[in-house]
Image (cartoon, rainbow, N blue to C red; front, top):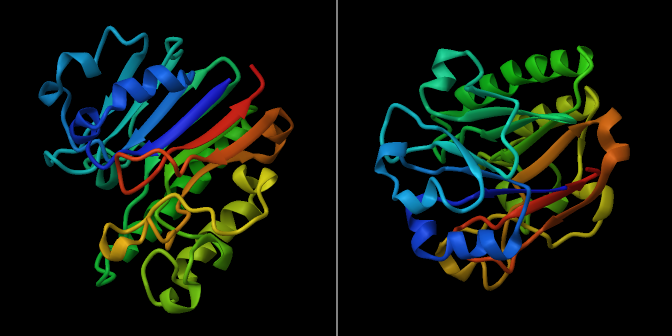
Length: 254
């Protein structure tokens, strides 16, 4: 079973760049999109139907901002928009879908911003999500948490770590939050298969960063530790264009 996560930086823009052709050629079972930047009523028909997927959307109150969507070949057993926390849900950041073997959290984590103006909001999000997903595991569920986490966890996860220790996305206080997830038994699936560096999922549009591979790995599939024995592969697909992020993938036993 193949899952893909991709911050598309605007689903309507991605559609004009061949999103549906990519979807047909790649043929994943589930696709989680972040930063869709659209309400359903703003979308063309071809993004919503006749492509072989059930689609679920969670949009923020503010149009053209944030938003997540999940495309599934098989209809989800249950769908929840948001975490049930108003200050996050109003921005359309979370879609939860239930599948036969796991719960899937598709999340666009907050960005702390260059001036750190949203840093506390971002840290609050990490802090309030963790006990929610821990409780699901304690209740006997396997859980996959994917999306744009907006933090590079370790120095290996960005091209220039020494230059960015005071930049939101690689500040010690943010990285400590990801440490706490791992301490609670959450596993970064990409690193199960790829110990090497120079593998990134986001590049600034400035300075020709992508062509020089000056990037950050900030998009992840995390799973609870007990589910790792069903994880078959994890990868990053930097050859796929259409956004400042590239897709990442996870293969699990069907």
